[in-house]
Image 1 (cartoon, rainbow, N blue to C red):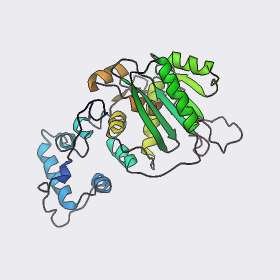
Image 2 (cartoon, rainbow, N blue to C red):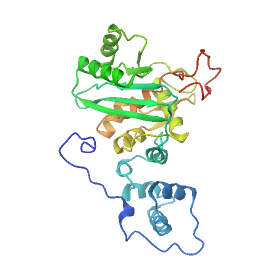
Image 3 (cartoon, one colour):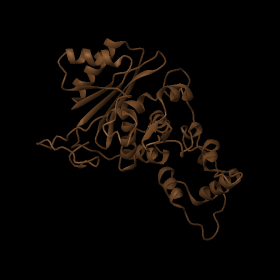
Image 4 (cartoon, helix red, strand yellow):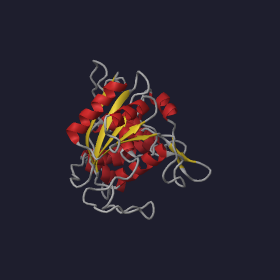
Length: 303
């Protein structure tokens, strides 16, 4: 994972199972692709012989009535992320939706640019910047070992370079000082601090703001087309958090500390992208303010 993030001199080399010519069997007469298999063909250009071999191997891995699909993904992954991924049933954002977004090239020129900044809390974590414009992630970058003023400098550099309409910053750890300094420099209207543990805007559906942001991001990824960088690291961040529901039926997300302990790192890029969903930002073509009547805001008016 450190090699994947470019944090060491080691180089990550990954060979997907479908590069192996022996992983193929005759599909037989009457072979029909399932919906999931059709998605795999679209993502990885698999043929029916490879799909037939995959079916056979999943059947072998299905022990005691359990579905062997997750075990297959771990033993015969299509991407480096799948080798270490939790079960899709536990992951809030599904791998198939992320893979579709990685292979998409759609643009969303009319949407406002929104910047999410997740400052590092501990020495081993990185400060992550992710810039989203509607249906696409325009840019992302991580920085290590930056102090508060250095993060402020990077943030202002991104503001000058990209001119985002809004910047959302996690105010846990270093974040509060960063927001205070940027506002002091005259950017009060541009920058908003977000506390992950604060009350969700839709508190009947989400336990806190972090669960709400990730829940909205999950809906965004599912509502294709979505265009994100072809990055294993971002893929791993997005599919990492597990989810559940509280006694009131509200979505709750695996705690950031528990997640970091399980992964051995923090999903910095995922949290930075989630921050771009903290609050609605009006599109540039919307002149008058319109208060949303419910959680289903007009898609043409908000991003």
